[in-house]
Each structure stands twice: as structure tokens, then as C-alpha cells.
Image 1 (cartoon, helix red, strand yellow):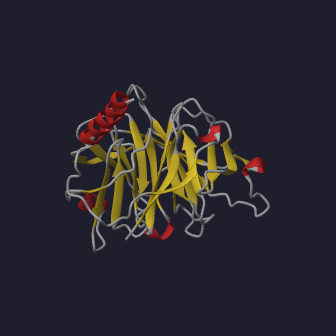
Image 2 (cartoon, one colour):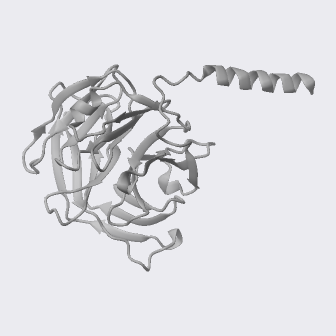
Amino acid sequence: MIRFLCLIVLASVLVDCEKKPLQNPTDAFGTAQRLGKMSDRALSEASGLAASPGNPGYLWTVNDSGNDASVLLVDTSLHVQMTCILAGIENRDWEDIVAGPGPDSSKHYLYVGEIGDNRAKHAYSYIYRFEEPVLSRSATTDQNAAALEITAFDTITFRLPDGPKDMETLFMDRKTRDLYLVTKREEPVYLYRIAYPYSTHDTLTAKKVMALPITTITAADLSPDGREIVMKNYEHIYYWQSTTSTSVVSLLAKPPFEILYEEEPQGEAMTWALGGSGFYTLSEHPLGSSVYLYLYKHR
């Protein structure tokens, strides 16, 4: 028994030793708060997250390759409240989702990123845009989640100027409506921009705007006021902040802070809360793991 306990202690010490200290740490956020536990198999490969402006208190998510072309509305307990199916669309490798403005300034829109490409073999990527559905007050339990077929949506077709690359990160500057993408597998990774207005009829070429000296980026989001960016990989959360209004490129040109990350089994999703009071992270659900929705509140 004593030998067994010693082995446990040694293993614990080795795990702690493997955790690298934060580079340029910040105390701008509190410790991650554990919210809902994932139990619904419909969320098991969640790879994107967006706070819902049309359904305050709820979040939109998508699953990646091999799943249905479904966009899911969940509460913070991770109960599915609405399932939206894009008619006639295949989920080749959906990797992110954004909620933001669009062509009609009086409406909210969802942008689904068909941007994953593990083998870097697809010449074209797609972003599907549609008006955000609003949850009926009568649909309040995951046992009777609302289902909706989306037939009216726009397809934004684009390519990268330097060839196919794997990407899991899509975010928006909600003031300019420009869309941004970050590559995953390079070191450094690269940031690309699709400037608004984006055609839904022609094939666009995203503009390569800068390199970022980090790697394996799986998610990012720009705060609603455009002054803060959070970005993550499987081990770190990076944070950029400005006290004045600035461009995304100017903001990312600064060295990032690091936020203490409550590590997840396979964390590939994050979004700012409405109003910018903090941000959420969510992981895929590998077999045998426990997955939670986390909230990092601003201090």
C-alpha cells in the first residue's frame, strides 16, 4: 500500500512538472468556472462555439467532419434546445461558427465555417451564412428540442492565396464585418482576412495578412467591442487587449498575454459572452473523458 501511494505521489509530481509556467501571464480573468457537463452524444465532436445574440443565455455549436450538417443551440448546461439542419449540404469538415451582423443590419446571422482540411487537399473552402433562428418559448427541454430545416442560406466560397491549409478558426470583426481565419498546423500560424462585403456568387481569395508566432490554433474570438482577442490551442489560451479602438492586425501585432487554462480533453471551441463579460470554452468528447463548458469571467 505504501509503495502504491508513493507511486501516486510521484505521478502527480511528474504531471505538475510537465506543466510549463505561463509566459507573460495576466490576471484579467478569474479561474475557469465549470458549467454544464456534456452528456448528449449530439455534441460529442463540438468544434465551434458562438454566443447567441438572438437567444441571450444560449450558445450555438457545430460538430466537425463525419457528422450531420446541423447547427445546435444549447443552454449553459449543454442541453440541446434547437437543431438547425442546412438543406442539401454535407458537413465535410465544419470547424467553427460565428454569430454576427450581415447584409441586413436589423438582423443577426450565423456563419458556419467549412474550413477544416487535415490533409490540405481541398482547393476551396466555404462559409454558410443564414439568419439566426429564434427559439420558441415552448421549446425549453432537450427531450423535446426544436428542429428546423434551413433552406435559405448564402454560400461564401473562397480559397487561400498560397494553397490549401487546415484551419479550425473563424472569427469576425463585428464593426467592419470582415471575417478572419487562422491556420492550424504551421509554426508560425497565419492570419487571413475576407473583407466585407463578400460575394456569394464569385470565388473569393482570402488575403494573407500576418504571421503569429504560435501553433496548433483551434479557436479564437474577437470581443464585441473589438478591443480584445482570445485564441487557444490544446495547451494555452492567448489574450490580446487594447484600451482604444484598433484594427485586428494592430491588436495581434503585440505580444500576447497568457490566461491560466483549465485544460480540456480536446478543446477546439471558444466564444466571448454577450457584452464581453468573459468567454466560454468547450471540448470535443473523446471516449472515456469528462467534458464541461467553462466560463472565464473578466475581473
